[in-house]
Length: 506
Image (tube, rainbow, N blue to C red; front, side, top):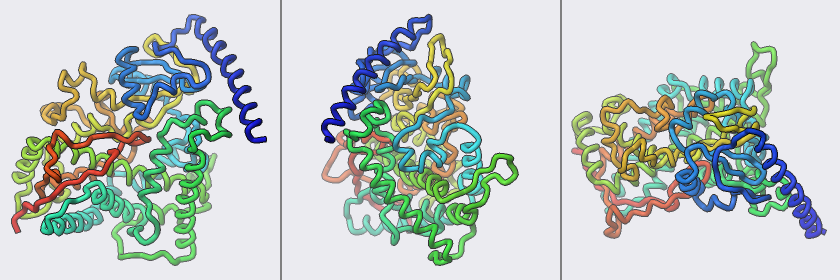
C-alpha cells in the first residue's frame, strides 16, 4: 500500500512539474528577463548541481553566469547574489522587498512554525521579537553587563590550557573553545552553566545542519511525505530533544526550583522570558502578541543555536588560519605585548586598542564567513533589479563565501590569508560595507553581532597572548586540514588540535 502511494505521488508530481516547468518558460517570455543561469531540468531543477558544499558549487556557477544568477531549486525560483554591488541592490536598495524569510520544514519543527526571530516572516511579530531580544540580551548595555561572566570564564580557560601545557599534551582546540563558549553563553542566557542538565552542543550542531541543508521536501513538496533524505525524522528527533529541555527549565522556574549558582549582577534572558509567560509581549499596541511556551521555546532555539555555534565556528577558523600563518601570530603577539605586556591576561578594556587583532578577525570572516549563504531571503512581490525580473516568492541566496574571494574586490591574492589588506581600510563588519557582510545587513542583519564579536575577540586575544602554539605530529602549517562542513553555518569538518606552551611571565 505504501509503495503504491509513493508511486502515485511520484507520477502525479512529475506531471505537475512538467506543467509548471513549461508554463514558467512561457510566462518568462513575456518581456520579463530573468537573470542568466543554467537550464533547470523538470522536477528537481538545479538541485543536483549543489553537491556537498553548495556555496562552492554556486561560486563556480557564478563565475560563468554572473553575480546575479537565476537557478531553479525544485519548484522554487532562486536568485544567487555573488558580488558586493549586487548584494547592495538586494539588501539595501530593495531591502523591504527581500526582507522576508522562506517557509521551510526546519523552522516548522525547530521553532514551532517559525515563532522565533531568524526564520519568522517579516512583519509586526518579527519586529516585536527582535526589539525584545535586543532589549533583554543583545543590546550594547546588556553585552557590557555580561563582562564579569566572560572574565571569570577566561581565567578558567587559561588555567585549563596552562595545565595541559605543563603536561606537554595535545589540546583539542575545537572542543576546548566550544566548551568555554557554551559555558559563557549558558550563564548569560540561563543564568547558570547547563553541564548537569543536558549535552546541548550535539543538539545545536544538528540544529544548524538541518536548518541549512537543502531539504528536498522544501523544494519538491509532493516528495515530502516520502522523506527521501531522512531529514524530517532527524528534525523530529532534534526538535523533541530541544523542546523537552526548554519545557523542563520553564517548569523549574514556574515551580521555584531553579538552581541558582551564585548572585548575579544581571538578569538572565531566560528568566526574563519566563516571567512574562502568558502576558502581552507588546502591551501598548492594538494588536498584541501573547508570550506562550511555543514562543519562548522558538526564541530560545534561535538564541542558543546562534550564540553557541556561530561564535565557536568563527574562533575555530581564526585559530586555524593563525596556525597556518606563524608570521601573523608573531605580529599579533607583538601587538599584544605592546598593549597588554607579558605580566597579565588580556582585559576587555584592551580590545579597542588591538588594531591588528581586528584586522585578523576581518580577514578570517572574509575567507570563512560563519553563514556562507547567510540566511535565505524571499521576495514579497514581483520586482525588476538591475534590469532582471525577480518573481514574487523567489528565494534569495547571498553567497558571502564567494564575495570574500572576488578578485575584483580583494585583488589576485584573494585566496590568501593576509590581514594587512585591511590596514588603513574603512571596511568594517557592521554591514555598511558590502564587500564584507558576514553578519548580513539591512533589516534582517544579525542583531547579536556585538555579543558574538566581544566573545570572539576576547578568546582569540587570550589564547594567542598567553600561549605559543604548534601543530602536533610534525604537521606543517601548509598541511593543516581546512575541510568545511556545510549547514546554515560552516564549521570545520574535523576538530582542530594543537600543542600549547605558556608564554606569560609569572
